[in-house]
Figure: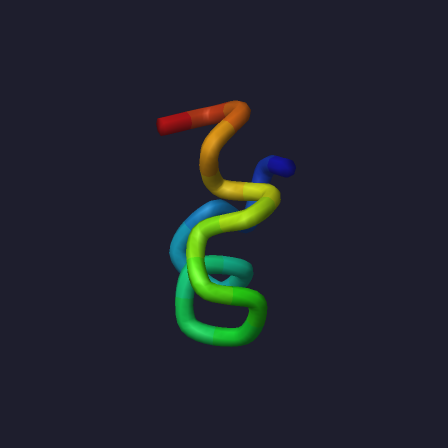
Length: 20
């Protein structure tokens, strides 16, 4: 996910795991 920071806050780094 491109919005890794937002996803980190929302889902707890689920999508963010892809971008880092």
